[in-house]
Length: 425
Image (tube, rainbow, N blue to C red; front, side, top):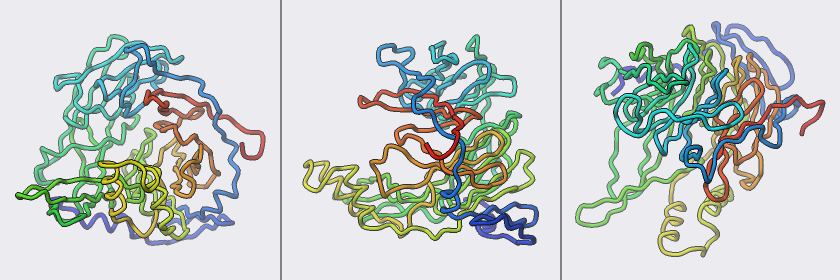
């Protein structure tokens, strides 16, 4: 196991405040030993009306039902490559699909496999300092740099972790955060926060992870740069008799997860159990900013839980057989007393933080609120983004994400960020 477990509590919960600068209203900034701690209330974000809005229709749409070359399947990431176009991590085929700036298909890179330039689990795409395409395979723990024009794999690098950091370090595979503008790769490695308890057939067992952030240079991982309690998961062991146990897990929106992103200059990360998001600059001088919300955690009610179950499996009495059994499984899963503080986060260039608000009160709402904070952690207000748009990147003047139609066909969409004259859209 990891040798630096004490780091988790120290990083997540300790601060030594030395100076206070009150900005006013429901927002303040504290200088704590060189770390800016920007604290706000949810109402303070609501009271501010950002001038940013989202265009109602996409300016670019990528994907096709009839053209196999342009068709998308299990998109895991999307990135805009300046001066080139758009790179799509199409994990269903193990390819990076390239499109020009207007959305027209150009060509594909890689494919499924284990050889150089091939992928077992394509999870991340980005841009190198030279403007080439970068891709990460979380199954093999390799990054590959491709030339956009020729499609040639320029270099494939295996990421490694020193044995002194983890037991069985050679088997560790980082989960991707992204690349700094200088080409260094950011990832995190999950380790269990406690002993691994195998399902015994006697009910639910909780597994909880610590997420350790590393920066990789020339393929070698740094020591743990930062750490926090991360994702939590419950698994059910059902005794089938004869010593056999069926193990099942349920995706539970009330459980905390670990979220992180980079804009090339900063990395932002945090656990959704608390609105306590931390930013590290690429100089790696430690945490430079913390964005916090002071509101008390909201309680998970029976109505919230029932709405989630009904949205997944329908009303009581709907379906039969396997669906009824699965619904019963959902009804028995333990949930936390409090809701997640947020759902996910992204960084806009310049260290502007976008945080997707957790919402269980209106699951059928066509849009979701994202709180936006400037490069100092000052809240700018909310931006409404369609619920069915899975956002991967926020640029200076656009939002890039994936929309799925009623047939399950995926499309990459770019929506322009527009400046409103006044008021909310």
